[in-house]
Length: 219
Figure 1 (cartoon, rainbow, N blue to C red):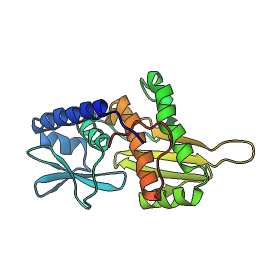
Figure 2: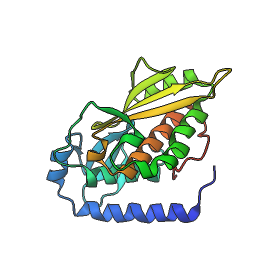
Figure 3: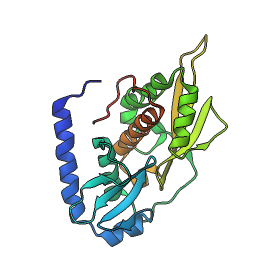
């Protein structure tokens, strides 16, 4: 897949801006808002789609704590925006909705469908077993709906439900992702898009499959 080098450069600049913002954040307030943050040496650690990251307490640089694989810019931005936008009184509502029913999501609906759910269905068409194994690798809990349905935590405070129906003689593969309605109390609505993108990419990675379609993922 080809990536726009100018756009990647802009994402890198944005990550650097967020790193600088992190340096001024009150770390005690962050821990209070997000109890999943753990202090590990010089880092505040958290898990994003089954992968453990550390944010350096002084510099704000994000590093993978349990592997040496590259970190996508999208994952970094998801982490930074979670720290910045999460509300202190946010709580899980157990009210599951598709993306377009989240607060202020409607303008992003067409791009979300093209860049997330269409990519999800295209990537895993004909690969039910691989998807199910990938969901388990990311710590997912099986759900009864769909040919494959799993609840997976983007972050400990942001659960998501991934549903997939494989293609048959009449219909192409279809996919959907549900969010708890509290998702926009933990992050910006645009970050809900990039969080879902990261989830699909992590599933493809865990399944050993190439991402198919028009994904907005930044390496």
